[in-house]
Amino acid sequence: MIKSGSGLKAYVLINTGLGRESEVTEALRGVKEITATHTVYGIHDVIVEVEAETMDEVKEVVFNQIRRLDHVKNTITLITYGESIDRD
Image 1 (cartoon, rainbow, N blue to C red):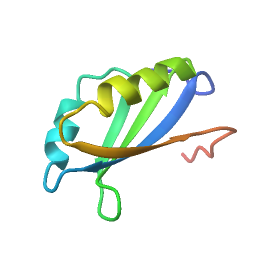
Image 2 (cartoon, rainbow, N blue to C red):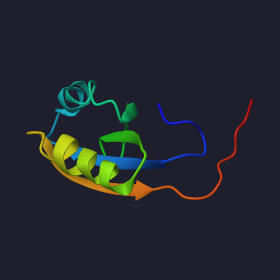
Image 3 (cartoon, rainbow, N blue to C red):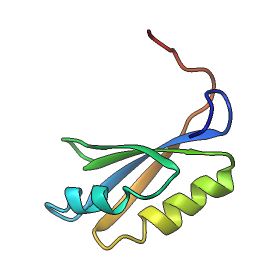
């Protein structure tokens, strides 16, 4: 896992085929750069958190690990910047 404050963090909003959220989430389980997955209600079906050292690594995960899955219809990638609020 990337140490806080280093590397990049991105959130990938995923639309899947109808009822395919669990299959997509399970297929992403072994991708080391993916630190969390959440199945959600609303316009998107799954949100994935990606942590990587470089933008090229983020692109590789999105293009080759996520978008190529059979039941992924489309994605939106949000790259974070700046400081986050840590609550204890």
